[in-house]
Image (cartoon, rainbow, N blue to C red):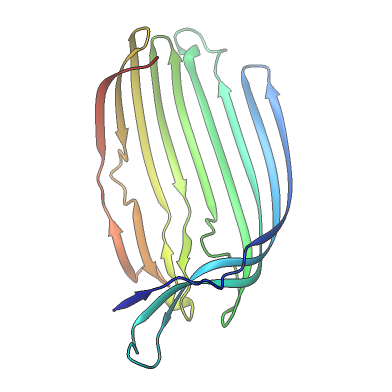
Length: 225
């Protein structure tokens, strides 16, 4: 379908009243645990509207432009854990873990659509887990990353909302210090060959775009000073 994209000089600035609380515990064995919660009362949030032109020269074309929503809110929790496993016997005492998780919920009032169960561009879940090894001159990391789905543009109804689906990726890196400032490294991206972008309208079975960039490995020698 043909598409017209335009700006909107009449957009109002976003206003937000935020409430945040967090706690952090430092562990005796070189680590920490964090817990946080937040609530945001939002006015004049902006979103991308995706509508069909009903009359005139461009009737039937898709019009994409930013609009203001009157009000919405966000609430969520954040969890984090960092731990160096120094208590393990050598050579495993160089191991460590880093993990975090964020859960977000919300509501948004949108003209012509009523109250939605989330704000546009709001990811519902984000999580990362990393296992690392640091013992001079060797360093290695393996990381798992998850990003939840979100609405990219709002259509005239739920069947025409454009979604970015959730993605999972695994990355890894290894480095070795040859001498001060000189490091030999090997880095791998998207090692499971996952889809890194999946777009659909309304339901996952109404696919609009899939991206398969594949996996990649880079190696080299770098100097730091």
